[in-house]
Length: 323
Image (cartoon, rainbow, N blue to C red; front, side, top):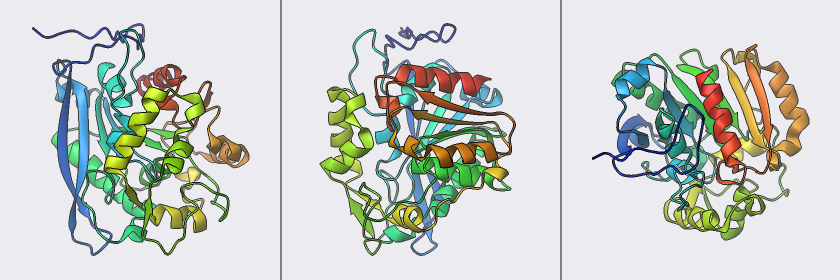
């Protein structure tokens, strides 16, 4: 007999979700894209989660397909489906589980040279445009597979720039866009952090320090920090430095005047990206869409979805997705 989740979308109760193999289905997909190394076909790993009791074609018809794009130093499943144990009334840490329980069909994408996707030796060639093209191939695949017209797209950190570049394109199939913890300004060499690296190096080797910097542990819990490090060390020991070239030499890459779809920019109040608030506010003001929102949420930093303030973040996302 199927066990029902305690998650109730009617009152947005996010606590006490009983996640079982029969309540949420997880499915792997392999989508063909183009290698930045030599132009050959390359396989992109896509991880799907949805409620087992919901018809995926009905979800697509209702516009409930969500695609998640990861940041520069963590692949998608590590970022958005982190295995953190929870108490019976505790809000889940997995963004994918929360959205799946709320009735969305959720897909996260590992860009080439990240996580479970195919890897090649040209880390510097995995630029933001290459990542946006991987997202394009995945969205086209999902729309064909599920007979969908478009998707909701969320990009976190570097993924926000990736998502915006795809959403700006003439062939975009994005209905609503979330830019979560976006970076607007150029990284200044010598400023520190996981993007301040030698641009002659093809790949960045993850360290405990770089993991802590991106996680901002002062806003989270120890039980989430350990799997963040363990899963990152397993799947993201090295990540391509194309993003570092872009962030050090090419920012800003997105043109907000081309964003004509409903757009939400959301950050934790403690996010180090908020230090760029003047540039971020100018970017927000220049977004072409009149349906645009900027949310600064408490009790969290750059990894707000894993922090103490994650419940308010989850509610804000679901409200935007459904509005």
